[in-house]
Length: 315
Picture 1 (cartoon, rainbow, N blue to C red):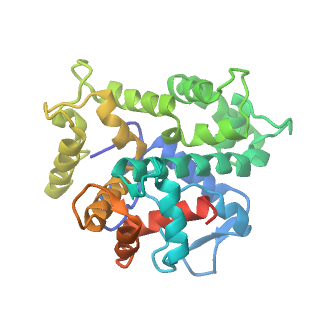
Picture 2: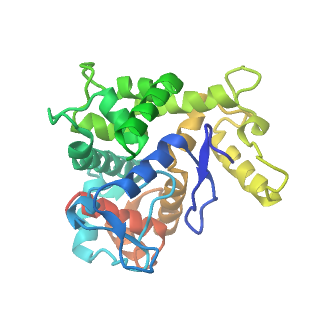
């Protein structure tokens, strides 16, 4: 399926559907590539690395296409798994539910977004007052051309995108002072970590695709092919995603049902669900410490996300 708004194609994980990314996410990727210190790891290679490794560690993964370093993956050791299980176990009953695992993942995303806001504040905060204005954010997002080009792009962006970036800025501005602090800046660039912003983005998708304006998306409205060259299997995968989102099975999606899709976390949630099914050997819908240990013997995508959680929890 195609996400709403102008898009750029992004490669997903091998077991993920190749989807297109909305502008707010693609702009985030462009900013990372343009940021000071971001360079090719070695001449003649396609790998990217940050000169400042600590800054790189603070960057949150891109939503819906998290970059997992599978080649250099190191499994959590038994002690880390023990502590991580306890961290995720919100009700302290010694067992993990799927809801606890997914909520822990979202908590990790919020931590990563906050760190990202802190890591880019210096680059965005032109007047060095410790906060950023809409104008400073717009200039930062417009690119790194000469001053006249930047000003022209900023003016165009503010004129053209009043209903998206300006509203996002105001929603990220929690205390309504017209400026974003480090935390709010992280939220602006990661709307999936903020309930109201995520709902706004889902509503934007709904408004653009809801051709009959009934407040619901049919499968035809949800799945839009750009050309006759689109492969038939893409439609089949799109239909599977649509059915998964359609919780009440009425053949239509409301805004609430679009939230997971808009967040870009469907592949992660799918991986967590598969992990829990694999780990839950006694079928009680929960995973004990022993089951958690045993399931990590199989290196799948969920295990990489657990590693990321452990890193953010500093285990």
